[in-house]
Length: 437
Image 1 (cartoon, rainbow, N blue to C red):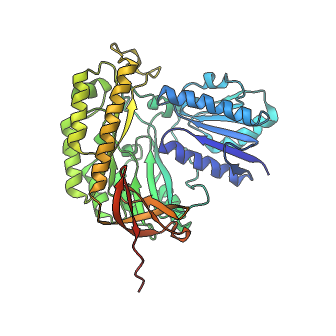
Image 2 (cartoon, rainbow, N blue to C red):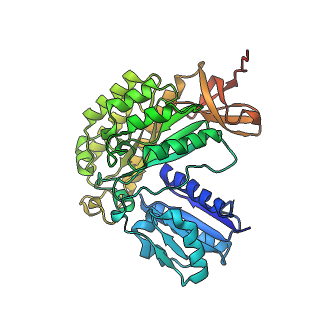
Image 3 (cartoon, rainbow, N blue to C red):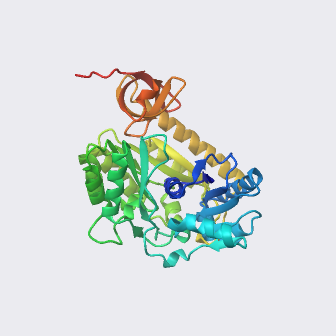
């Protein structure tokens, strides 16, 4: 039996896509093995949001070649899309596929194996793609807890630092009937939590007409047997009162919004090309907190954007502290060829960017601890995702990780946990026995 191994870099969209690609290979008789093992085919699903993503992608390609020099090496994802010729020039690469047309990836692999010569560059012009790329919505076997469903692709915001619109192309939404079909299938397979994800999730339906993300949430939330429905990242300017209402009114919706901020300084936001102000962001957060009980609001923050002064950095720190996020993802600005910001004057020195990153990350850790501490001596509901060495772990609806003593039969179950302590923003507690009638 042929073996295929995958490695995924980057965001939840990439994670979802890898799961879909794995399902396509399984359907054709391949066995999926860990990336460190010898395989017949290696697939590296790349990220190009930062130069670090590019570098890691190249490292993983070389690792695959070392593991089995006879294997076929496939490179896909955003780095492959925006720098196909560069990727094709890496020794050992046989096939380069971008971010579209991957429903045919197994055919492409087998055609490449038969015909050659290498490398084969099969990157489509993503700007001309108008159809949503249909990949299976299945997660890898072994656990029936959380599965992702990509419902939207593409972005037209063109923030000045971001390469994603060039890598992902125009807006395409998955028809709601297809979303519901996959969601029902996953629930029938035993998945308890579904996560709706997309490149610009809040823009869902804009190309379809007559449906929005809020309406999609309402429809998915009504699927019998679904325990939890979660949203991945949604741009602040895309969050509507109707979407907040949908999350508030549907009991299966997780009280968690990830709203990328990027900067807490209006002047930096303008240079970034972001479509909101700090005042508008504050009003949105206030609306969500007023309507969704126990909600966690997490965010992304970028430090070291070109021209960012020490005063603007301090302004951003103050805003983050005042807003009281439940968690931060901190990014250091990375020049991306083809974006306006790559040519901006006043690039911030590397040393200063690293100092600002450490400062913002420390604040994020403190805020996470502060938010989690609200649940000390409280009972929370946890979806158990792992049990190792007698220790169970999983997430609450508002995305706090909890650890407690537990047995393997708890996997995939919603359990009540009494929180005794907080450690590094994680909940530590004990299981409350089920009171079966």
